[in-house]
Image (cartoon, rainbow, N blue to C red; front, side, top):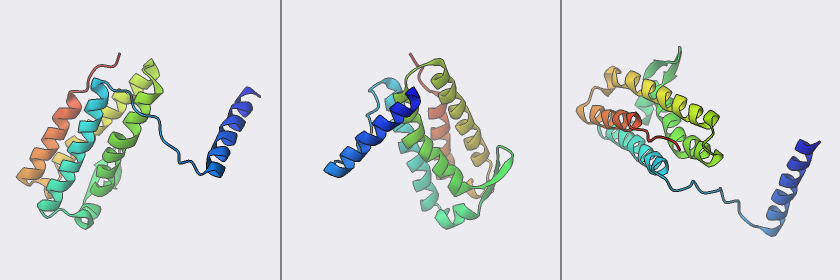
Length: 150
């Protein structure tokens, strides 16, 4: 019953905001070394995309490049967009959720998986361009240097 009441309050608040024409603003991520690290992660993923585009691995090509990640085939574009999603949405959401052990474990597990994906990307024949390899190496080094959570 308590859960239902909480959902009703959230719905009522959303309805009031809609009727008043107020936009939804997401809560901000608290400022911390981890927040700065997450921001840099997003920038480095963009650098990989930019380097790929400049070296002939455009979006259409990335959609045709298949990688075997986590036991399944995935195209390179989807993998890179997943990394971008983690940097822009998932990691900040986890930081806003708090620093409990479950949140920490999820953050570190996701980071470890992202590093594995990058290690697979580095091996792709289509990405053997020096600029792309340099961007991927910078991203991998950054993910390896995740700050400790408090």
